[in-house]
Image (cartoon, rainbow, N blue to C red; front, side, top):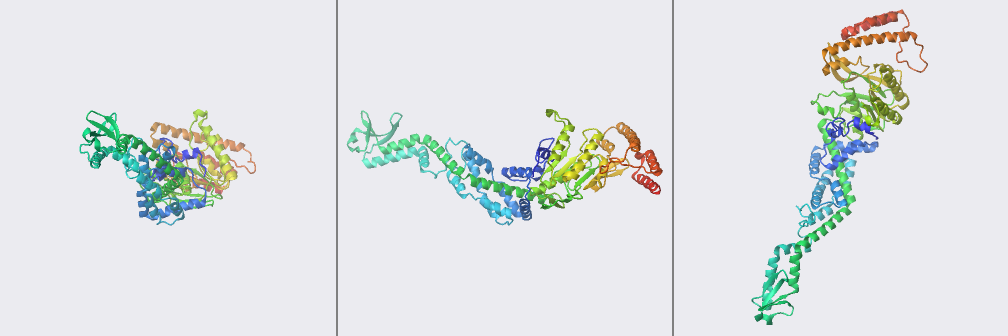
Length: 605
């Protein structure tokens, strides 16, 4: 599925629009991964949903099995907790900046793999079986590191102490030389006394000659031919032997040589590990994907998600759908669920009206997120869901000036809308909020009206279209596939309560002044706003009436936005009476009585 930057931003997939943080995003809601590799993989899945039905359903079936087998899932996640970032560690191996502590972390991670595979053997869905086969136990790599690298090595690889005792004889000898040199010398001295019979033979050392064997003149006759004279003194002579020279070289060069040798061995070990890069990468990928599948199962189990039915059909049907992020921000059980019913025929475009703050944007975003979640292989927050795969999700939600590009709010809005109309297909999902609000009322209404007609008649995309232009509700029955929905509101005197429930039909009003009151505007401002609103509504009725008297019949095939046709005197009387009604003074029941009375007059006329 293709998701442009605007859609990723508007749906807040991995970063919130305001705080630029992870909290409050879809990624935040779904990411319960235990490894860094899993964290990167789940982000990639969210930003790149699938189109292939088989791949989607393979993931869903795997999540379902992991959800059902709770104890296996818990044990797998506990093992994953001990797995380091194998991908990053191998990156350091390839780049050559890995150290021995990294290799120990790699070894410890590999040590968990056999146990993970053993648990996966208890699962049978096709994707999990494939992933288990993809994950290599890597026993040979584990054993290489385990027998060669010290368990607690220093950070630097050039300070020695990184190769484990027993891995290399030469390293062991050098180490012994640095710690057991005096013991070797004493043992050699005793051995030479016994072999030569020279009781006062001794081994000494100075900085000029190094180690030497000193023999007094009284024992010259017992000196073996293998001794090499090195220095003659008044009462004695000093000799060396090949064995003593070897010990000297070992002792004196041991520390420097062992550091160099350990580094050389480390490079060899690193290169051997690098040679297995493909096996290790494949294993890391398998572990990361299992981590994501376990995360999906964990969220589905904890938050009561359902397994969606995903196919190549044209329906998007959701029963009691919820917003995966918003519901986490609210008290448990307080989010109001809603249904969705879209297809490519009679219900392809839903016009949604209702007051600000009532939940229109939340409803539309949650629908887009539910579709996206289904196509990444996740369960969805709903009682049930049937999703016909979409090729793209387009969103046009909110706008702001782009000063750097020299674009106004309206220009940004129209540019985004142009991109949608040029690239959407009948397999796309469109989420459009308040198209046309960035310009004058009639310009905006005209553009919104035309956009709805174009989407419905030319493109055929499944579309959610929120608007304050109540005139657009006239399109139901006139433009194919258009249906009206609104957010239900309960009035209590001057107070309003947003019920957050989507119902069929158009909204009665925008309740803008009531929303302003809830926001805390001064009472004087609200009272004056009501007066101005009434004057504007009265003026608008008079203006429309004048235009209607002068208007001609609409051209065949084109719809008139305000097609009111007073055909007789009775119609005119009803219009005149409507003009005198003080709407703000009516209760809902009084309004129904007035409507009923006027309806009877029209029927009788």
